Figure 1 (cartoon, rainbow, N blue to C red):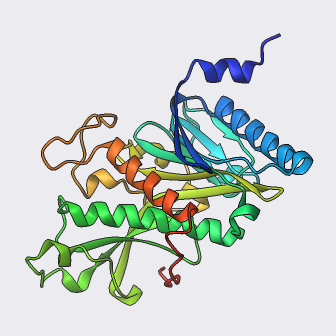
Figure 2: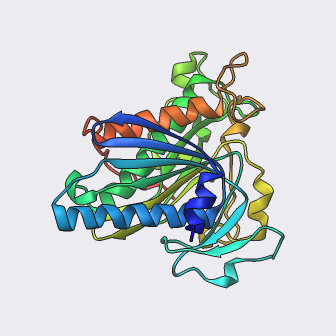
Length: 292
């Protein structure tokens, strides 16, 4: 009898790349949530058993996933945060956090990491994930001018709510420097910044020191999907996408530049490169600034 999970995964477009001896990436396109989750859990359990029974350390994995539209409700998620039922399926899952949406135009990266071998705590994992997103988003904001804003926009995490948020430094709104590099420096003080909304969410599951699930960065997705929920359990949370702040290709999967626009693939590669450096110990954690 065929394994339905494996059979479904085989119908999904996949590509695997070796990043280093101890880190590989796997790309999945048009992926159904249940089949992807089951395969991710199966791989994690396999790695746990190999380490426990054979003392074998296996390479960590980054799964780059383009999900078909789905709402997922975390392990302790409350149904009350689902405001409206639509045709999009709602799936209960085993990650932390409340309800969120995944779909096309959103960059989802699952971190299948052996935290004990890396010497990372769960807090380290979360901070590395948030700061990797900050690095990539701020690099994009620095490289390209904002489309419809006179404020300096930058990305930051918060102590009180996991994820990455965009902030506007209003002190520069009427006194902008003509140097683009200076225009797009991250906001230096939390007190100078006004939060615009959330651009990336994260939720992990830890099992015997191994992580799975991960992060979701809104690139050029349809944000109306978030109107049916309280995103991550926060009523009124404004969700944002990077395409409204920098120029992106209309075709999210194109691997080439059109004029000065960034592609989905280029941003994905920026994130993979940043995470790979963190995994190799080449990027250390920064002190966390208190943003609200």
